[in-house]
Length: 420
Image (cartoon, helix red, strand yellow):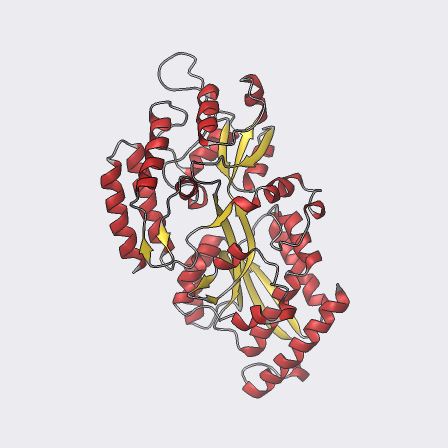
């Protein structure tokens, strides 16, 4: 690893230092390495590992020193643009991937097209849909640090009590199992145990309902500028799931994402859709859990994927941009990418890392097996937050008994307005 890294960094570093000397905006080579700041929101054990990877990169060469600063994702979202405006922002920043197009559209991120074109960038084998999430109108403004499809977590003990031996694989099986797992002991119409926790708004990573719409054969946006949510396929999907939730009572109504997490972690819901963090939540609450792909709908088996990405801010001069790109190339080396996957609990970002390399972490192994079901959520759509808000309103009102056709027409208009 170190020999190849040294060779790549030597080339990049030499170029960067020449640029720094010419521009006058960075210290010349005789004054020491180029200093970069890196904001990220990895606040748990994964953050410690990321900081260690940064330290290892710093130790692997002498052209650059990156200093990580840990903040919450919300703080990054709230403070990045003001910090950049006052020239006090970071040189590298990580954020949820669906947010990156918003900032790229506002000129916050540098174009990384040339970086991706460089054979030494180690990006050739990255998961294509992970790169799609940070690409706007054909231009890549970031690199992925995580990409994982939502998965179904299920309570093995509750499955065993109900005589269910394996996870459902289709919608019909899912509803049938959820009905069997729903328990209303006193017959008052409010189950003490639900078969599944399906939030109707503020859903996990905003991806549950988009996953269902995809599996049912529908879409939300065609490309980046055409709303297509008002379709017969989406109407059928909404009707199927609102019926299962309200009539079969397999899940509470009015549930949000946090409430769904709590139902599963308390043992009051047998199934739940979530991301890698649910493994820790289940373990902390002594839930013996399994992981499976979200069951297939009538059209396909698909799950919206959660993404995190990092980019170089436009505040960075050419020397710092070269340093950031050198770090990205280091981060994507096969051994470093494997280390990061095992530590973060997310599938490898490189498609050429075999499952055997991550089998020591059962959560990573399970999520890697279902990785092909992942679909980028609203890739390249600048106003993705407004689109998600419209979907939230649609699903919440549909589950509450609203007219599905009218709601889809309203969502169509709102989403089209958001993306124009």
